[in-house]
Amino acid sequence: MLIDTHCHLDAAEFDSDRDAVHAAALAAGVGRIVVPAVAVDSFHRVKTSVERYPGCVAAYGIHPLCVMQAQESDLAVLRDWLERERPVAVGEIGLDFHVTDSDPARQEFYLVEQLQLAREFDLPVLLHVRRAIDRILKHLRRIRVPCGIAHAFNGSRQQADEFIRLGFKLGFGGAMTFPGRPASAHWLPNCR
Ligand SMILES: [Zn+2]
Ligand SMILES: [Zn+2]
Image (cartoon, rainbow, N blue to C red; front, side, top):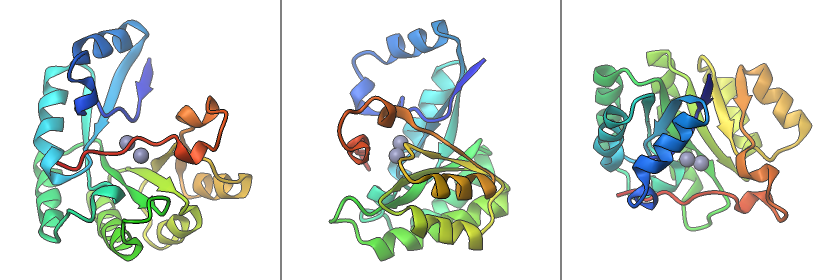
């Protein structure tokens, strides 16, 4: 059975063909699809999606490109959802220093808080890492989470080895097929 560990099936981009996309995935042998949230405003949307589509399971978290709109109280909301819904992972969380109008310090604050929640609830983390690999490894060495996946990885062999040493799997996704800089192969989340 194939597992898609990262699919934003709840996103508006799928509004016109969500049923068909899900059916095509099942037909291709994908038996599990992890749908990660990006902001507390998306939690209900993700929950509705995974309840509607067989094989889909949820992850809840605050995406690094959604922290500018986030409030500290969102972390309490996330904790409630982790406690009540028992999702398969905390995500999507991480650091994105490629997008310059998102405050790095604010991203790191939300990353650290969410890593601590993952450790507390003994959950894997789904990491979004762009232009911040060494920085995120520093946090992962300090706050040991059970395991996780860094998706759209485009770092060095040494950085890959360090993720693996810390118990992580790596995702390559679109980076394998992009002729240009793989750093641009990221989807922008809708935080509302
Ligand atoms: Zn994502
Ligand atoms: Zn991402």
